[in-house]
Image (cartoon, rainbow, N blue to C red):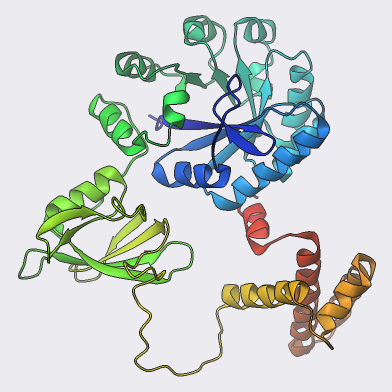
Length: 426
C-alpha cells in the first residue's frame, strides 16, 4: 500500500503568498512558508497562480522558480494556464508537475499536448464537479497522473468512472471523515486550509493518522533506543550537521525520551544535562532544527543528525557552535562542489564590486554578446582538445569553458542550485 500524502497549497498574488483564492490577504513571506512546509513533514506543495494578466503571471512564475530553489519536496503549480507555453514555463521553473483547471474547456487539449511532451506523470487536473471526469473518462488515464478533487462529495461518482488516484480537499480538520476517506483505495492524499496553517503540527497529524492504520510517510526508525549504547549517564551524544552544507553545527545529548520525541515530532529534541530536562531545540528562540536523517556510528554509541537549521545553531548567535580556532593549517580546497561555488561567488562579487584590470569585469562590461562568443569559442576548444590524446589539454579547456559558463550564469541570474535542481529532475 502506498503512503498517503499531506499536501500543502500556496496561493500566489503579485508574487506574494495570500490566504486563499477568495481572501487575498498576504499571510507570510512565501519562501519562508515554502521552507516551513519543506521541513515540517509536508509531502507535496501545490502552488496556485492567481494572476490576472501576463505581467503578474511572469512575476508569479519567478516566485515559483524561487520556491523550487529552496525546497526538496515535490512542487506542482497551476493557475492562469491559457496555452502550452504556460505549461512549459512552470516545468522549466522547476515544478515536478503542472495542475490544469478542469473548469476550463482548453484544459483537455493542453493535457493531451503536455502528456505527450513531458509524460502524463507531470500532468494533474483539479475538478470541482463530476462533468469534466465524466465527459473525458475515455482519456483520463491517458492524459493525467492524478486528480485534485475540490468537492469531497464527488468521491463515489469519481470512483465509479475512473480508477485515477486523487488528492481530496477538506474544508476543515474532521479526523473521522479524513480517516474514513484515507482508507479508500484510490485516494493518494489530503489537502485543505487547515494543512496550510503554519501552526499545524504535520508530524503530529501523521502520527494520529498512523494510529488509525493509515500508512503515512513519517519516520519509521530502523534502530530503536535499545539498540544504542548509552554512556554512564544513560545518554547518547549527538553530532549535528547542516544537511545541505555538512557544516557541524553543535553537539548535544539524548536520552530515550528525547530520542522518541525527535522521531515522533521531526524536530531535534535533546536532554539538557545542566537543567536536567528535555528541550526541543528552538522552541524558545525559534531556531528549530528539522530532522533530515539520524545515523548511528559503528559502535552504536553516537548519533549523527543531519538537520535543516532555522536561524542559527549557537546560543551566541553564531551559525555554528564551532568557531574558536585552536590550530589551523592552510590547505588547497579540493572539494569539487565547494570549488565551483567559490569561483561562482568570486564572479558574482566582481559583478557587484568591479575591480580594475579584472578579466571577469571586462566580460561583464562588453555584455552578453561577448560572453556568448567566449562560451562558443571554449566549446570549440573542447572539441579540438578531445582529439588530442593528451588529457591535460582537455582538462584545461573544460576549466576555461566552466569559468565562462559561470560568467554567463551570473549575467543571467542562474545559480548552481538552479542547475543542480534541473539535473535532479532528469
